[in-house]
Length: 137
Image (cartoon, rainbow, N blue to C red; front, side, top):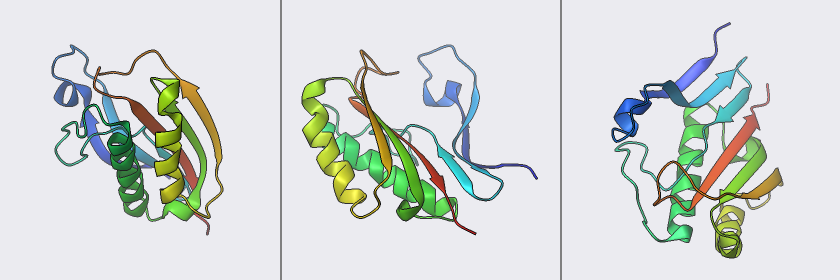
């Protein structure tokens, strides 16, 4: 069985300022049950435009909106999320970011890892949320 790849793209289209050409996707559904999501940022998935520049709460809201949309496209929902990794560029953003994530995942209880990083692919990105889910049979 081939894995299902959702929202395929090439990095030369998403990051035209960089001379990189990688074929990627926003989500992979493996064996019909496991869902691996690409780290989501403050970016509109339909237009690839950055949103909420300078607003970590707004970027987190967009990331979670993207995760919700991708989970639905994969045939699941937020309740199926098992693992999150949350990357922030400044430890002072932690409360704002986790407040938004908590609102979206109320009652889900995933395991979570938080990491502070020095930079993201673009300077306007302040947060990235990576999720893994399992859709039950």
